[in-house]
Length: 322
Length: 252
Image 1 (cartoon, each protein chain N blue to C red):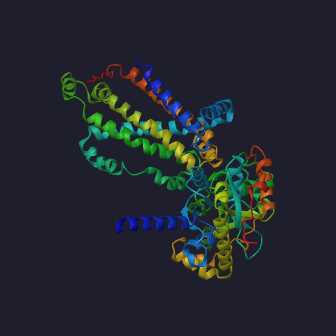
Image 2 (image 1 turned 135 degrees about the horizontal axis):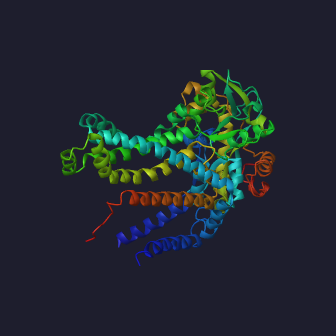
Image 3 (image 1 turned 90 degrees about the vertical axis):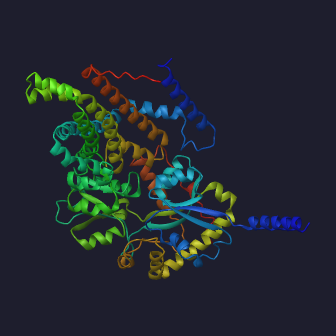
């Protein structure tokens, strides 16, 4: 009799415990420029709602297509992704929404913006000189590809026809430019600082120069089903995310040390601490207008989209703290 | 019936695919229907620039394969018929056969550039191994009775090589070719996926980056069809050239 009573009681408590388990957010992350997102796992003490109103599991992906395939397969609830990648995804009918900004490509001495560099003593003095040459980007139809093409179009060149755009891994681009294997290459931190320190390279143009305005680089997206099923968990997650972003911006050195210690960043700490950072909005608000301009550019100039994407319906900032 | 069976198998696989696609269990973006893949396939063949992409990949694959065939037959013959050279080169080939040469691709880019040459060079290296190893094995296995007979009839070394060793090794050389030819296609597609602005591999990665699985699968079908046709052409050439050695399998 006692055994039966104990079993019933334990079942009741187990059910109660299960009912109180906060929803798990499976978030696909990348390996660059997402410091405040990583900090939520490296320093969970900065995210008071974590474990109480939501649980967070970050999963590393090397590229956007794989991240979106995992999302389509139901293995992810959310993720970080470039705004233009989400535009692609929405164009294909994927049910996801951008809910917060991670970082932007912006003008200003204090910010880093993706930079295209050429051989310092080489013949290329302006973008026009890239005619007949090759420009190295990190992947096809990525943001680095878009900026490269935008830069070429601005200079009156036709991408692929006048100048080849080839994908290559970030770590090899520096030497590829120096040895003349490509005429110009894409540099992001930490490779930008490391390669600039080696010398022999010169800035040709930046991502902001290429498109002509500050714009979203990385954003956080959620699946629409998850947003509908667990709105409170998303609100709690974003409340923590904004708090962590503010902490990161005002305690950048300590935050970078914590990320390095937790293994999120492999760059030597002294180089990592010196790197200029991308612009980050402390309230994680999304620059929707810049996404609209990018979408129009992708559709009209690059023919990357069959039809325009409704950016307003793609962004939902109502889950962010007021 | 035996002629119908392979098509029946393909039909069953396609039916399973279509059923899975229509089941609603997976997103059509991941699991596109056969009709959508077929549409993309038609689009592929209707566009001249896509056919040019296929030609680029074929040229790279066949270029690397042809170079590997020339060097591989020469090296394999030398290793098979010369004890000293065989002992010298055997450890080199058997010791490095398992090395994934694709890992060397970044070095190839630095040496040969980002264009076709680095891809052809890697195809050459990957194809060289099976051709050398099979040729060397065949050259070692030449029937002694044939060699003695030729010697007894007064044939010179050059005649023995031309009339006995090469014909006896030919089936092994073609076996090496049949292993190497699909490898050539695989390597060329992968290298184009890693660093290229043209070719079928580039089209695969372009479609993937656009989240167009249907388009990507259409390109994959084209690659598979090219591989199948190349293999069939090779078998045809083998049967014509080595007419005395027809495969005659006895199934128990």
